[in-house]
Length: 182
Length: 133
Image (cartoon, rainbow over all chains, first blue to last red; front, top):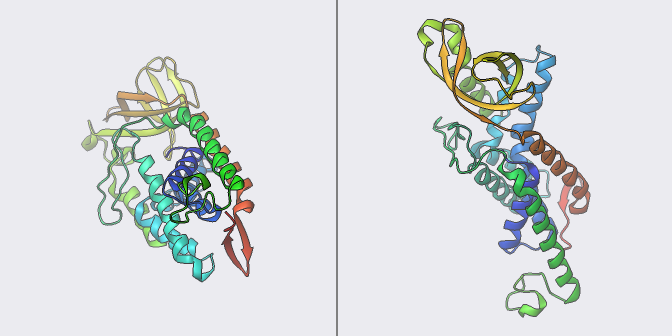
């Protein structure tokens, strides 16, 4: 997994590039990009650490959460999470959470783990894959740049919106000066 | 979700071949390929011996230990040697930036916790995404 900061920045930049402008939509997309690690990786890693000093923790518990970092588990989890939102919003929230989650997986798939990839079609097959293009810590060097880029872009878009009415929204046909082009 | 989790437990414990399987039948597993991605060095026993841990604790490895310290993260590829139940290292990748990556993860969590109330609110028992741009 890449780090959460990188995943969040990538999701925010992708959301802005895709034309999302509302804070809520972008927040759900970013939250979706954090879901795979928060639910699928952190519990297992935490259990491994706790188990080092408290071996009574059963080993199967460590593997219980991993499917939430895979496409099938992610879709099911996001469906459940979307039910925390009001019924009219659920479909949109589910879509944004899932888009964020799949963006997360796409970034993770770039990494190399000595050929031990992600089981993309779990539970139907145990076939696994990863592109192996970058090391697992490659994002550490990229994260500060991404953070600056994301912060700068967000600030610039907000400034445009404050300056001109209608700027920063997706109103079709809006003149570029007012921010319609985003 | 529980079904997926339980099936994954079955896959990890029963279907994926690993060091645990080698210990169950060492003679038959002699020479079997082992891959340990992102394990932690838990002991350095000598110039050519160290131990690594993840879910399994203190798996002995025969390989160059110069430059390794307890707590380092390492990925290893090698094969099982039945005579002394060790992994013979063939390939390795060190992960010196692993701690920084963890810190970035924590920073992400802190940022998310700080930004959460700005982006979401509770309304009528449901979470609501703020839609004020």
